[in-house]
Length: 258
Image (cartoon, rainbow, N blue to C red; front, side):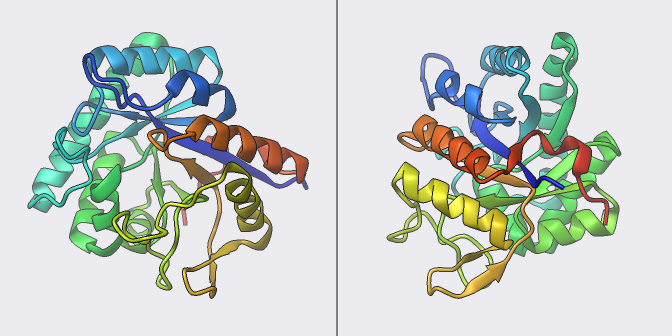
């Protein structure tokens, strides 16, 4: 049986006259798009444009909810209660779902953004709030997580789960990501990142910052849309994966319900 994986990217993060990311260059290389919902980035016009563009290229669409933090791009800690996290997440899913419905696109998944995602890795109450919002919107909606409490709460609540890895981010020994503020947290070089992604799929894991192997389930690989040279990285990733005999397609048909 041929191995397969999804390639996702965070898109639609521009706001008003401010352009963030290289969405038109990224879309032809990915299979799933995580579309910002207006809290950390994006606005109604950008959301509609991004859904339309993804539809035109056959790219699956998911909601990318974050903290209400345009100034910090959703990468700062906010003192949010679990109830606030639940309602904010549900609100953002609903906003993007409206544009998907208008464009005749099925909403495939939800992937938390930035610090909301990182905090949910360790905070069970926050993770439960996110997973519950996904479940309450639709039992068929898939939650994308890179492990930790968010994955555990998805399994506990019966939410379909897609396991994500980051080809361009360094990992800590516990499987969490090295914070962006630390040296070496974001890897560089499209070729090196692509080769690492292939190893992740073939070996079922990644080496942490100390060189120790961490087992990981790999359903989808992320390319950050706001990273300089993201389109080149995505193109290199797709080429390297296909050359290794690894098919690329959206993860919607194979998400786990364990």
